Length: 542
Image 1: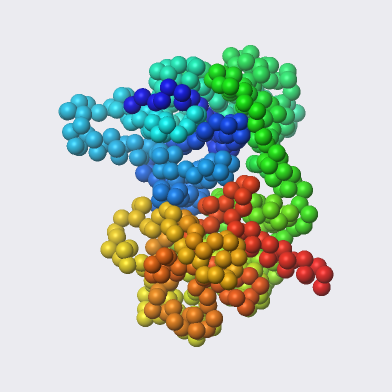
Image 2: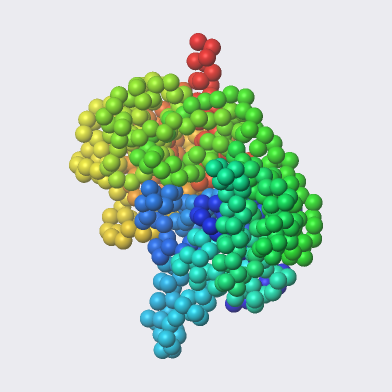
């Protein structure tokens, strides 16, 4: 496979420790280059052997991000979409599991004509094919590839080798490496230490890669002397040693890197025209985050609150919606299990909004239902997402419709299953990639809170679920006042519900947080935060 001649390839690697921010670095660079008029996309290469993160525990992996085309991907793709405001696809995320699965399938099919299948060349060739796949579309000028893991890890070696081969094949004029590394501050010594970065670069050099730019993560901005020292010992131009110091918000990082002339260095290195960019909207967005006029506290009642990366897109959606409402959203994380044993008014007292997110399994369900009940009975703005909507329907069925044993067949199968398995899910045995995944259309009823938010009667949102509202109970639910404000175009599936007699009570079967963007908050989050802020301000006046 040969890429289009004009496509430039940027590879982002990381050293010393994990969680340094390769994804934010890649996203920030993508934004800066896009603002200069280049067509940019980003892809993630994950070294784990799982085919995708769809069956992985949220406590271990965090959020599973879902694309329009139904791929279950790494949460970094969420950063890519939020920063670039560009939809990613399944081609933007590759795992070791996918690579080996494809190679073994080819071997079983006889594609290799009896050859001994090896890491080099067969595994690395498959990785290269995936690195080049997006270049064949003719839609991009620049492709940024983030290599997961840390340089030196056994798991990452095939990806690094594939990267090395591509850089050799297409030359320095068309490829470059950006290495993200740590420059720690040792408080006891009162010194910043450059040795970890030196060792990190040494590991990369041993694998045949000379970094072109070093993104040095540190607590505070590095002095010019320190940067010159790093440049000397790592054989990198001094101006290409960039200080990426801690910021109050991840959305500030592109502005910091721009001041460091990061994007200009990249353009010079790849022989691309130095087009003028415009970051005015982004600067205004960051200013709104850093200088909120008001503050509002919203409870997030979930079963994975001990690991908030499980709700990464929700947390970022609150940032976006807060910026549009000129306020800071303070999230009170409430364990759904704690709500099962403790009084709701104790744990939820004082909040001005309640969000019940998605999830799977019976653990904490009754706590989520209690949170819904507390919101409904106390007229607190409420947003239910996926399982959160299902819990809202169960709560309404029990406490308003009088169906005391109402439940979901996921937890307790009986004749009162107001939530039931979708028909096309009943005979599925495999767990991975078998749910209702990706973007599906939804028709919105006029004169509803949903319609007011979207200002549109026809939308598309991303899904990840197996269960739906049981249509047998539609009649009794609507008779008691539940409004089915969003339905699938064939009217078979309930996509949104709301209670018109409340301040703001809306729930959806889809995941709106997956469509929220940095400078374009999702309509449901925007309106939910607006309603919560209104309640908060009314409390102050009272």
